[in-house]
Every structure is written in structure tokens, then in C-alpha cells.
Image 1: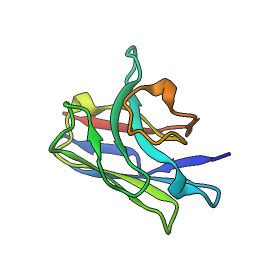
Image 2: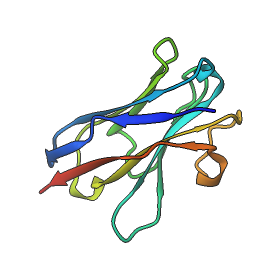
Image 3: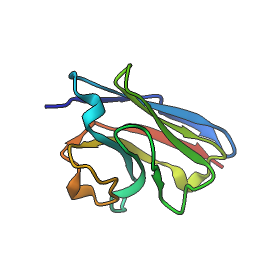
Length: 124
């Protein structure tokens, strides 16, 4: 079992930055592929980024490439999402996810664990 708790969301102006954190419980954090999804009002849940168990091979949605960076610190059981050059269309609830699978996947159903989400609002 893994419990995920996100933090770092908030209100920011377009062009600004935010850093999301996700703290995971348990002693096997390094066994999980970690990722982030987001969901805007009236839209389906959307893949944002994911990272392998050892921190390599990150995968990003085209909409965030070059602006967002996913990273992890296995010693702190934490995964991060650094978001730069934010746009109003980045406004959404952001969810931290984890899977015991070995593949860095963009498919939401492949992720076993989800956090409660943190709101990110980007004003124009």
C-alpha cells in the first residue's frame, strides 16, 4: 500500500512557476514508477509526466515539454513537478500517481495509487 499526499498548488500569474511535491508513505517508494496527471473542469483526466523507479527516462505530455520537469528523491520518498512558464490552460487539479509496474506509462488505469490532488490556478 502507498499513500500519496500532494502539496505546493496555488494561484499564480501566467508566466510564473510552481513546484508540486508528493510525499509517499511506506518503505518501498523506489519500487514504484511515479507520475502526475491533471484534470481541468469539464475535461478528462490528462497525463502530465512520469518517471522511472531510479529517476531516469522521464516522459512528458507534449503540452508541457520544455516547461515542466519531473524528478524524484528516493531517500525522501518524494516526487516533484517543477512547472515553469505556466499558462492559463495549465489550470487544473494535479494528481500524484504511483504504479508497481516497471513501465513509465501514460495510461491512467495502469496506476494503482492516486493522491487527493492539489489545485493549480493560473491567471491571465
